[in-house]
Image 1 (cartoon, rainbow, N blue to C red):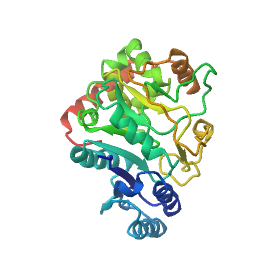
Image 2: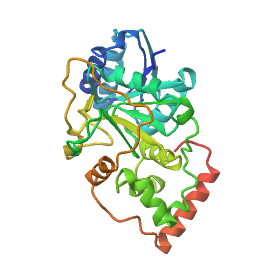
Image 3: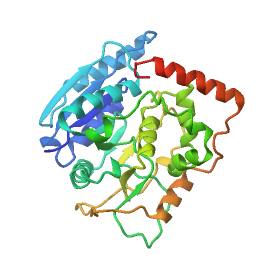
Image 4: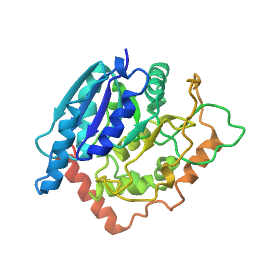
Length: 316
């Protein structure tokens, strides 16, 4: 059975259309179910923003080219993190696996095939928690001849996973108090990039609202990996100021060699191991920064936040 595709949209009509048209051109699209979750307007949304939301919603009701299409439109704004968490949880519970894209991901024609084959191939490999379709522009050694690799950082730009990996995520991240007291734990978490522990702290402090860093933390707790293609199978077109979270930014991290082959030739390998040179190159690509220093003031703040999280039963 093919994994269902989950698409999250909001207020970017042009980006949404590019994403959908690319998916329609993918192998297996016509045999795949598509679930679309459209977020609602914020309380202070302008007329222009409301019009863009309406334009997106009008467009998604015209989409064809998939086996079945299911659309869910939120009345109020959930935010991307809550939309992804609730939407993926709802679909993956029924299907056991899912492929996830947001409204700024342009997929290669082999994207769906790769994610589906990898989800089937690595279903019982419990060290792999996520399949990513995107790769970054970090250098590979000429001696590395595999088509895939694994690292301790999940992917949010076109990815897939399984229900048994997803359903036990603690989205309230209640167990981080000891994490921030330990340089060793932060170092292990930062195997996927030295920016990760800082993002987790910002999530706890409410400075960012990211499902992805919490998903990363879940992988860390299980010493799990994300499997990725050496040549990227998706392109991110969202760094043009139109996105809520991305804005306008340096896109060099999101520029990589696109898979240009016209014939599918990605070889999956059983019991794949982490390549230390690739892992180091991937880690260094994200820059080097020190661990999060815990002062007495931050300790008090973390304790206060953790107590609040224990009292809260809502997804934050």
